[in-house]
Length: 267
Ligand SMILES: Nc1ncnc2c1ncn2[C@@H]1O[C@H](COP(=O)(O)OP(=O)(O)OP(=O)(O)O)[C@@H](O)[C@H]1O
Image (cartoon, rainbow, N blue to C red; front, top):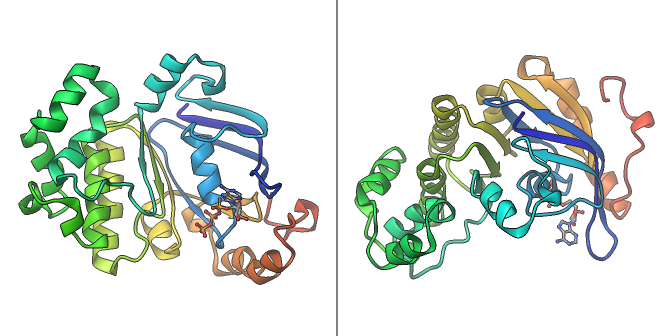
């Protein structure tokens, strides 16, 4: 099992509850899209799934291990098996594209090799190959601050392709991208999952992409899983129920929706 969350709750500093009693299991090789309105808790859920945020309540099992019972070294090795694409890729502006891509494997290399690769890129052919899959091979030696926002997002995806993680987590990887580039990025993440058997969990505001590329779709609203369904069962009515409470939920200072009061198809 790639990921198992049981009764997970998160209260952020300041007291805002972002997740409540979330149960979610993701098998090896499975592809899941997280959808839901802004502030629903998707990023928080992905941070818990990537062991970068310890939940306030509940249990997390990640690639067969409970991350929060591990020592620092074992936790670092576990995190090196997880690949994450963020909404705004944290790429140092002066870094060269090749170095940014090779950084995907820093966690898997010895400290010496990792430090040396910052000066002398160790595997330019590998970085070139990953960038080629995203149509960006000609920018291999450019600096990151010479790239557009969309090109930077492609570099961030090239980095996880190069990393070859066992679990792929993508937090709105196509925010502010044009439709063709969005399609390219999602298709490459899906191809990577299929080729390597890595599970893929991606949050997406583009519902059409979620339904097209992901066999299973999880609707999240106000910190709770509202539905967890095969893509073919996500009807317009379910989507309306998921998104229609957005304004009300925001207005009530993040108050959680009572699951018992949720529509019948929710669980
Ligand atoms: N670091 C933080 N400190 C305090 N509150 C936070 C923090 N991160 C998120 N929150 C709050 O937790 C709730 C869920 O936020 P989260 O970012 O997980 O939602 P989201 O579904 O990813 O939203 P979006 O689609 O807009 O990215 C929100 O109410 C948000 O304000």
